[in-house]
Image 1 (cartoon, rainbow, N blue to C red):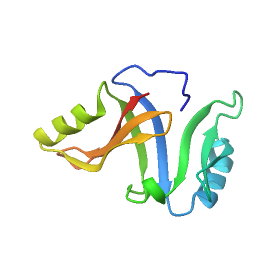
Image 2: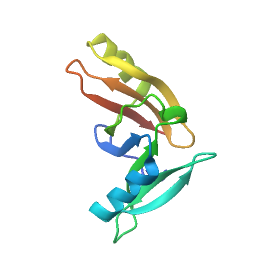
Image 3: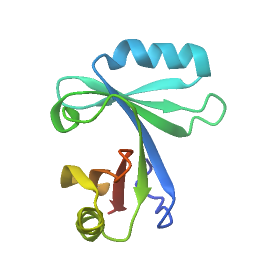
Length: 129
């Protein structure tokens, strides 16, 4: 996710896959989809931006289930841009959803949380910095 681009509220602005072994899975998607893997230093290990093969533009992230990602489900997780993550998390609960990961900051990128809607689907809500 580029820090210079501010996504429009309501858009899906990023997608991550958080799993136990990001090294093997990023190789899998590199060979199946053609994405080019770019390591992202997480302080002792790497997560990966997967970049489009022609433009080099970051498309998705493949992350280890460690640190702040330790409690995320092993699935493709979309990040939906909202005006105010804290307010949207509060509304989620009021409307019968659950907050799986409380709102928190991503250094230099903004704030996010992970919610589950009343039907059981999981998504992240994101407010850019």
